Length: 197
Image 1 (cartoon, rainbow, N blue to C red):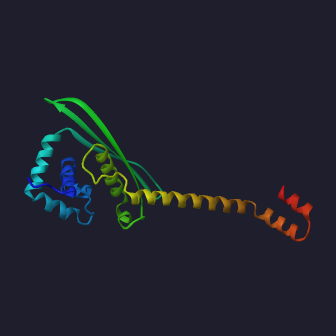
Image 2: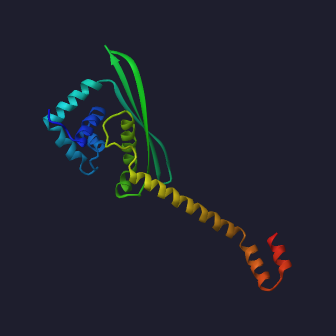
């Protein structure tokens, strides 16, 4: 059998899990817009079907994937995926391992997340769980861009939180600040101290 490239191998592994060419193509990294076409094109290839058959034999009845929507809070979607692998010997389960992946997406944060943040989070969570389980991935669980973006978002949240706190403190104490400013301008230090207290 001709050696498959990384994306094709990921497609085959995902097809064994999903039993759906479009979903397998998405999990392999094809875009939502091309997944249907690419998935069905790949399923027509004899080498792809041969690899899928090998994987079916290896994992038949031994793999399950479950996803769970953890929460939607404002524009944030959080998903969890669990991959369970069972080792079978002569039809008997001898071992079981569970691998978990999580993902978070912000609705509207990218073109794809304007319409498909939930699906994007689910696919990312499944991909991470599969990576933890040892299925072939592109050698990373969180991309450098994802890490940088998360750090940037945390910094922006921190700056925003501080600005809100400052604005609230200023609003809550506005009349005192104006009174102190006025008393200081009029050389009324005792009245400024009194307004401060």
